[in-house]
Image (cartoon, rainbow, N blue to C red; front, side):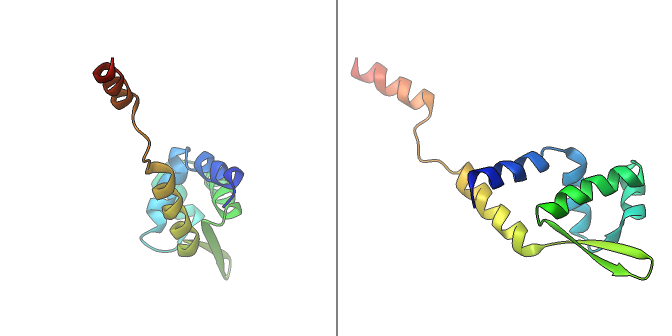
Amino acid sequence: MKPKEIAELFKALSAEKRVEIIEMLKEGPCCVGAMAKKLSISEPATSQHLRILKSLGLVDDRRDGCNIHYCLCPEKLGELSDIFVIVCSCNAKSCVEEEEEEKEKG
């Protein structure tokens, strides 16, 4: 995944409501109205958050008559998990470790 794509994912997940939507969808598919009610925000606001999550491939939708049910995309969430592991794991020395080494040397 390119750095720009990774940055877009992090940017999308910086919105608390979007993270709440992902958490909610872990329990199973849900429609906008039910999500909006649980999130205590309007349906248009919920739809906007879903649009962003869908554009990044984190969420998909399925039409059922007049209703649209949203669900998570496990493949993309797996990629996201891999990205977090890569970004959050670091073999570099911390500033504190570097400082301590410098003091020992000099």
